[in-house]
Image (cartoon, rainbow, N blue to C red; front, side, top):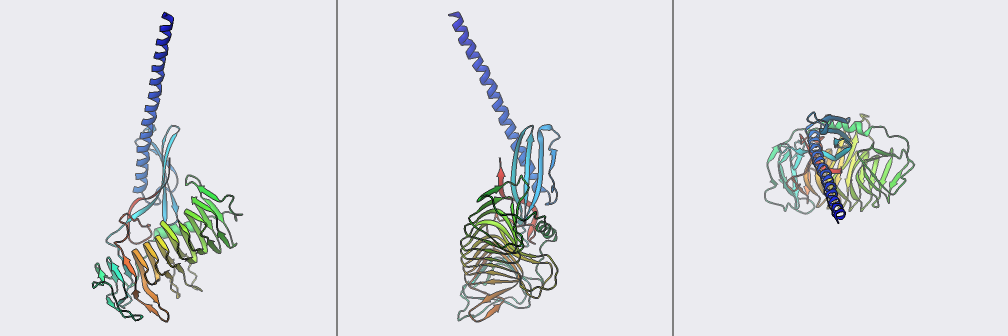
Length: 414
């Protein structure tokens, strides 16, 4: 009996010792995880406080000169945005946060419309509504009678302050544009033979996964691509509605997006981008035609076209290093809604019932009726800077960006 009692007591004592040991391990694990979380947060704040070029290569250091407070930080250029990689390290344990960065909007420079001074008034017709501050020619704004219809909007033509604009548009920021040019001209690797899978997800912890189609005309269809993936083409590239793109970058001479596409991505072309009807581009997306070379001779104007019933959340713009005789055009079709920013050093062409929730910077507006093209007319359209979410963040290349970075989108974490 004594032996049995001693055995039971021994088992109970051993169980208490083992339970205490595992409790201590779990407690230490929890403490270590909380410390990793705090350090990862500090690393994120370091990246947000720095400039885009501060941590272009991975840098590992101690936050408080203690072995258990090591962090590794890096910034990666990603189109018009910047990716931040923040890691917290304790022995073999690693916690990481990967996110996209952008900047808050400078309210003193923000406007529903900034139209370069052409010494001509801005004419409004039909059911047109403009809400927010505007920068227009000192010639002002007036009502117009077009296509057998008069102005039927609010009695207050501009529901905001009216400022006089300059002869030229505020330029896109030189530093970010130079970084974007360098990104566009990066090594494209060898010509790719195609996709080995119909679904590819690639982490930003790894080098970019690049597919180079060369001079072959390619169509993306029945494919799902997500993450750190770049698609290059030296000619036309088509994105079918069956393709799903998430945070992917597409660079080509011209890009066509078929009707019904849903996704979010950044599209960069040298000539044209044509987005057909009923497409949905989630935030943050980008569609831009970029001409960095100063060739002097341009055969076709740069053009971005968003067609009927498309919804686009993000940035739509054109950049030309040298102004050409053929002015670039951003075409926003019937019942298209853009939530974000539109920037064109040439013209913005708006069809009936087009809506811009955000801001449009342009040299001038166009409207095409059945028989006539009108310049400096806004007809049956809505432009409202106040309709844009107060949490909207702008890429640093736009002239309305503040210097301080914020988290645009969380991409990966563990």
